[in-house]
Image 1 (cartoon, helix red, strand yellow):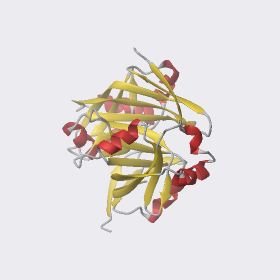
Image 2 (cartoon, one colour):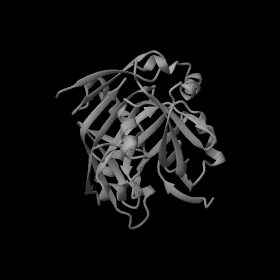
Image 3 (tube, one colour):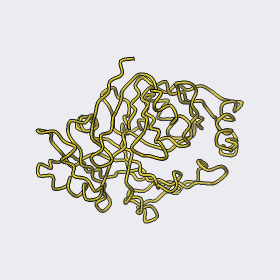
Length: 149
Length: 149
């Protein structure tokens, strides 16, 4: 796995915070996969990064999103699949996980995956879509994982 | 200012959340400039976005960061100044501000700006640097502001 542990000083005053770069999500940070909100970074048409807060569902060592193709973030991923996802520990913003990888997009016409996400959040994702909207599963297979804190 | 208000459904179940796109930070979200932690998105050498949690200081309608040039995020900005910053309302992750723009990098050899950041966070940023490290001011002048919630 080639884990590389680097001590850097960031965050809370005078406290050393460790960043570990691996290709898999370390056991020390797997609890964050149950968090509610993540930040998704995509590349916009201008070439600049774009960030948004999103819902997600963990599936083993990948993270999956249910997105409506009308959203700019999906258009960005269709044009440029490179993306990054940051998940904070809700109790400690100096502890977080970053997953960098490429997005794989697959159709979800019957809301099979959308309903799994809806079950996590107590929501029916159909209520968020207009007639004719198309919902997809975006799977982020991490090429690089950075665990902070 | 050309504010464009778009109703989209995202976030809390069945609650409509409004996203407003402007070129300036709207009064409704200026309080978030006092938050502690933001997420910075840069473009990495691989072309993928990279995210990290950072300290920041607001200066009018711009946000400034004190960064050590040894950090990958600074190398990314030197190569590709396009960036984005997301600031959550710590009390409500469905309310946040995204600033998209380009980073302007200027030297801070005497830690004048670093000390202003340190005063916000109760920290001396010199303690985070090694001898010979170079600290810079990164100013994000937003080209586009998106206010959620």
